[in-house]
Length: 133
Image (cartoon, rainbow, N blue to C red):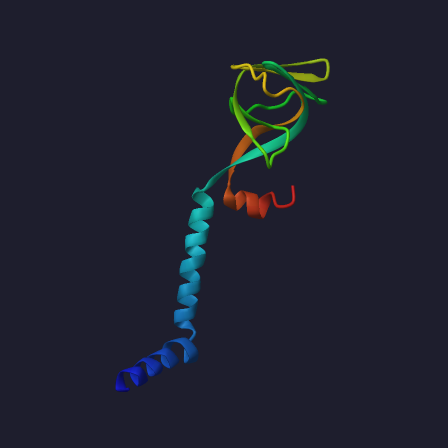
């Protein structure tokens, strides 16, 4: 009984009457969040509708796409299956971006969605600087 009264007094003294401990906890957790947000790298992806035939993907676009990485993600329905494929080479001609894959995919053909990695950024940039874009 005496021990619980002592804990109650300590709690009242440091948590209720003085907000210093609360602000200390808040500062520590904000600091941990900021450090994690600066260190965590995220890929920036752009999705395009494309036509796939064997080992070649054709994307109709206004200008050449910036392939930041040599990997692309391909899917018909994102909830079903997403394929991660390696790009051998790419070129832009007459309003169409041609991407040649390093391996042929006969199991996927026709209209698909292609996600291209266009860069990397930190979580902090994604939340505060590029929010909504």
